[in-house]
Length: 279
Image (cartoon, rainbow, N blue to C red; front, side, top):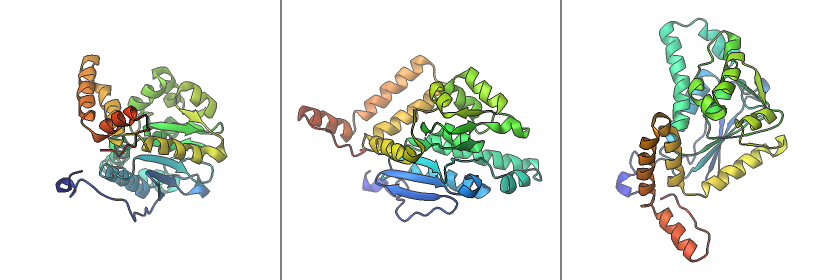
C-alpha cells in the first residue's frame, strides 16, 4: 500500500490480545479460539462484540491472510450462554432486544466483509450462534463426531437468525436448510460432509493441524485475488447472471493490474513457483 494511504487504512495486530477469546498469529494465519471449555465455549454479550470488532479490524490488516476459528476442549461453541445472555434477554425492552440482535448480525456481516478467507474448525457441539459462526465462515472442516444444530426453534424463536435463511440454503440447498431450521436437529459430521456443509472431515486430534494447514496454503496464494474472490462470492448473490459476468470482468481486470499477476507470469516462464505478496 502506498505510504500516503497507510494512515487509517492499514493496521497491525502485533501485540493484540483478546479479552473474551484467545487470538494467536501463526505466520500469516490468525487463530481465534473460543475458550470457555467448561461450558462448551458459549458466547456472551462481550464476546459477540469483541468478535465483531476484530473481524471489522481485519479489513485493515494485511499481515493476516487467512483465519481459523476453533473451540477449546473438544467442542466448537454451544451458542449464547444461557445464564449470561438468554436470562437477561427475557428481561429486556424491545429496543434493547433489537440492539442485541443487530449486534449479533453485525458479527456475521463483519465475517463476510473481511477480506481474509475464514475456516471454521468444528468438533463436538456446534449449536445456535456457534452454528451461525460456522455457517458464516468461508470453509468448514468438521469431525465425524461434530454436531451442528440451528436450534433456535427449540427455544421458541424463529430459525431466521443472523442471516441463516439467506446463507444456509446457499450452502446446503433450500430443502435441507428448511429441515435444519424448522427442526433444530443436529447435523452429524458424515451427513454434513455429504450435504456440503463441511468441505472436509478430519480426525479430532488432527482437526486444528488440518485447518491451520489449509489456511496456510490459502495464505500463500494471491491475497488481493482471494479478497476479490470472497467479495464476488458475497456480492453476486444479489445479481443476475449478466450483471455477475460484467462484475467479474471488472474484478479480473483489476486483478490483472496486481504485481502478483505479473509474478505468476514470470515464475511460469522461469518454470518456478510464484511467491505471492498480496499486492
